Image 1 (tube, rainbow, N blue to C red):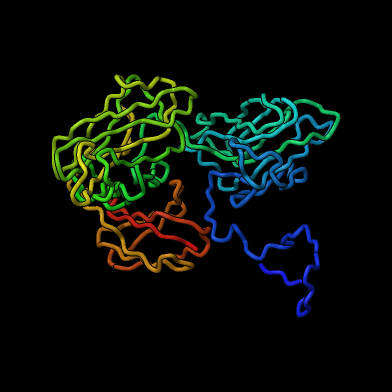
Image 2: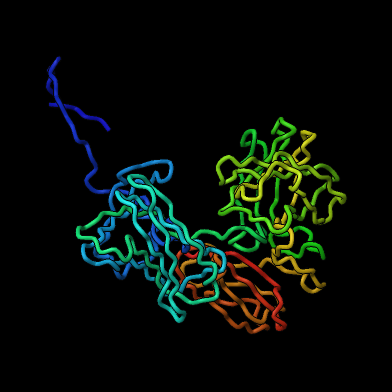
Length: 445
């Protein structure tokens, strides 16, 4: 941006003052191409995913009045709680119903000048309403309120409501700033990650001591067998450029690990060698709780899937530490001369289930389906094997969008996805015995 005052005139020493330079209308949409995350009700920026019914007339989008480590958002919501209406609510409409199978911890951030009771409520649909009370205990600063609706995972609700200062008849209009109204992941008390289910994906990894220390890819299972029949697994790359024997990788979980009767964590590994594999549990959400430190065991098989167990009962971790990070270090005693590839899958709390059933011979042959075009706007063409009887399409949260029968003597099938919302979808094919025979992922734009 360049300014020339009084152009083409020489005025050495002349002073000009200017102020309040602003952009009156945005010329670029910062939310363009944002893929909706259905578990977020409203972040008042790019994830504004549902319309409001009751209370919408009292809600506006404003600048965050108090940015902090709790909430550094630029934009937030301002709800003006009307006077003399003790049960005034803000309700978001979810016409397709809430999927509470995994994301069932409802949270909202609130900034208020006074302490107040808050009612969070699920209603609408075919099931009885469910109410849970919480409260604003901090004033003049952002606070995250969270309640557990896991008891409603089998029920049908189509509205989610918040009653700020619920049941109290205030005589003035009170301001409540709100943000990040969303459903969060339930605590990991079984499966932690399995790479086949979007709710247990954990496909974002970071590396230490630097970015060239490792790599990760979500890939097809290179060797399906009776130990691991999964279609997708994680591929870890220990890089020769890492330069440190303790170089590793970590992922931050959407919630925290909740142990059962013991502190055992299991993971399936396909390693090219017999050697040390280190797991660490870190980022405790409870203040002051210690991390586990290195927990190293040795695998016993090369080039075969093997389920290994790490016992964290003798490490410094505590029962209520709320650990939300898994760290892996491959072959902690050596820096490889060349890049080494490991495959891993089904990390879980002991006794939990990642859908890891023993495979039968006909289940081992799950093929990757060919789909085109990808991304797709209207018609998706799917090339099948001769075993396909029907096709199922789900979104990334596992909700079924379509179930299409297939004529087995046709190699290709055309599916109209025009009405689908923009986003990523999983396409799976099943044979006449309802067994999985093919899988593919496509993007609708």
